[in-house]
Length: 316
Length: 283
Ligand SMILES: Nc1ncnc2c1ncn2[C@@H]1O[C@H](COP(=O)(O)OP(=O)(O)OP(=O)(O)O)[C@@H](O)[C@H]1O
Ligand SMILES: [Mg+2]
Image 1 (cartoon, helix red, strand yellow):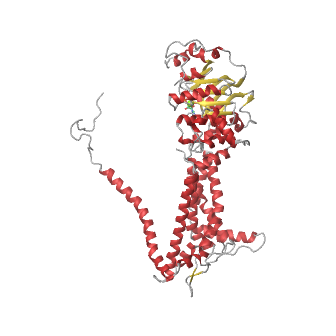
Image 2 (tube, helix red, strand yellow):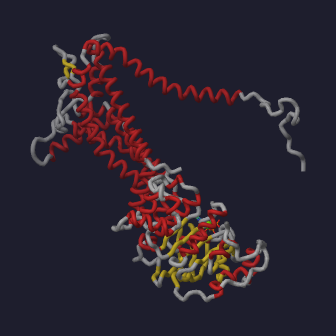
Image 3 (cartoon, chains in turn yellow, cyan):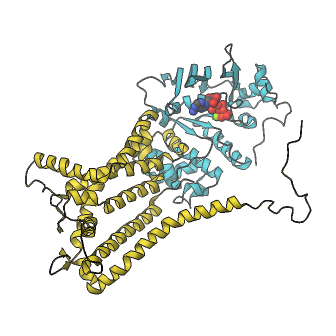
């Protein structure tokens, strides 16, 4: 046997023999790169918020904040302008709720099915299909809502007034379809990560598959599931194209999903691509609504974090 | 402390305790005939024939990979949950074919509980761990009473009565394992299967579980897989020794080599492989 060539070593006992023998430049460089990568996303987020603030502050110098939040009339670009943002907020909420009514049951149902019921082969087909669904451009969904869903609803409406050409129902429904893959895929990941011995323990006590899914796997995966739903909500609140196309551009304070309505995002898009002079009140309106949108999403995320802390079951 | 071993360390075993010398109880719970289990195309264990008697402890020992866990999982159809496992042969439970089409595996598992190698309490409170089985089984009585009775029965009540609402994961490993046993008896099974229940525990926690097993054996039928031969000797009435064989085609598969009263199996095994194994000479 020949001796394996050894890295040269300082003899034990000589001064500093345990010190690093090579400078670890590559190690350090990789570290710097990784930190930089993490910082980019954080700094961009902060930058966006900071950029929103000055025009929004100017806006609230001219428009009373209370009147903005509680006002029911939104016509900022007409004379005389009115800055009651409630119609936009309710529109966003109505459409988001419709989307969630579609996406949460179907998305979580799909996740439970894929994680607890489906065999290898079915899962191997379903997951890629879901991911393709997630990759369809939202403008396609928007036209699908306007050109397929709405006409279908109008034709087959059972009684009473049918939906308007632009309406919240189609937009919300299609938006729900759009976010199913997001919710299903993330929720499935977190359910699949629940350790097998927990399931075995539950089965050994005489649980049905459904009981294992709902009483053991679901609670153990709750934090991931809530994260999936929150991401779905965030996408719904922030979604622009579908609502701009299918729900129309008319600020409308109503909870009736059969009417057209303008969401916060749809307003920002419409006003943003218009030719509002920089520094005008109309221009600043965009930033005020943008800031409100951001605050809404933030509050929702905070609530969900608290919910998760309270209800999740942590497995090691 | 550990209960004294029935064998001196390495010496000749002392005369048999009375209950080991007694003939096996006549009531048979399981009758296994021609049982083979395949994982995909691989035959993990071949042609097992054995009976398991009521209200006694049967130990299963043998080297790693010879199919002890596989056979154990046949008794409550846990192998159903492994997509590529296939069970051939007969497993009769009180003369009923466990694998017949009309048998509901959920009903089977309510009567035949299982405790696993690594304690696996649910990440729920101590109370909810015990209440889980009764709840999914549609229990209608007073859960509080049931939880207290069960924990008392499992000799765990005094240790956890002030922690009923805290997470079971905050208990020590030994307490977690006894909680898992308690959770199993809360559904009032007839049989408890245990797969190396003490392998992750220290000797004191192990002794507590052995005590518990011996007490539970007055009421339940227990089948326990163990790598600890002293444990098998201490707690069991009957012991099954599993080993590996290589057939003419060179395929390695698990076999039941010998099943006998524990005292006989350890002091006077009829197969030389059993003797080699228990005296520490392998292969
Ligand atoms: N889920 C499985 N899929 C495929 N093969 C398996 C599976 N479980 C066990 N086996 C194989 O079956 C054989 C018997 O395994 P088993 O776990 O029953 O042995 P064991 O006697 O319990 O071993 P140990 O003492 O190490 O627990 C082994 O060859 C093992 O690789
Ligand atoms: Mg095993």
